[in-house]
Length: 390
Image (spheres, one colour):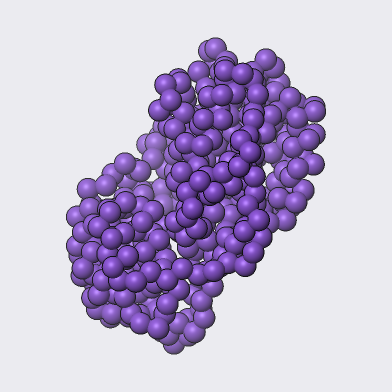
């Protein structure tokens, strides 16, 4: 069994490896801090609380068993452990008497006064220091090596921030732009002292980039939009690009892992290097109406996000009518909906309510990510609609 430990990226990667016929399992930690705060398993106080209040869906997929357990604690150890430098889930809470740290979605106690009182009495929110993340992660690797002395450990690195990944690269790991400069020294220590092997995501993505001939907007279409508003009007905008959800990357990494299982080596092809173009300034891509319609008609996440992201490259005219005519084709995606919401605040057009109405049946039918995700998505859709008609 190959065990993948980390956030949704490791879930995507595990599925790609499973597609090659290898047996896989996946688990998530909330933070390197959660396990370290109680390495012997789920704290009894949290276990009792979860059972009493029925909190199975309150942890955003990071169950208490995942937050405080590690592969190999029970049963046969994995043949290979793969993990990445996953970001720390917010918010994190410290149980002040027992000292354990955990993640829970605050929505879980909004309608449960007894649970809210327990959280207020026993816990406080904490914020990990971003500057010391790599030290915390190294501690986690030490725990893993102690638990799994004979299991190969493979670390998938994070993509570095390059100028071409504009308008500005965004990482879910706080302070990654700075940490990425320190990371190679840590990799060397982890390899020397813990036997951890690294899988260079920069090189693998570089090979995919060269082979595809496509730009950053196709590979990484999701934009994080921050608006500055005054008196109901948008007076400023900052956009950054999510460079962590790269659709074709998982298949490329999966092939490396399959080869590693066969040979025990990580090797790269000649074209798998960082392209020189990544160090050049970013060039915005503006899609014409025909290209936008083609992407909307695909009914797929990445083309949809690329189309909506393109709206922000040309704010000289309002593309809401195209969006309104295509709502039924949009797949459920929080990242794309975030961009739609921001665009609706820039161009307050009542036609955006039509988009919300035609997209809603798809959103109502989507329950794969659990009830809290489902409720939150529908609430955001309602908020977008209300603003368009206000």
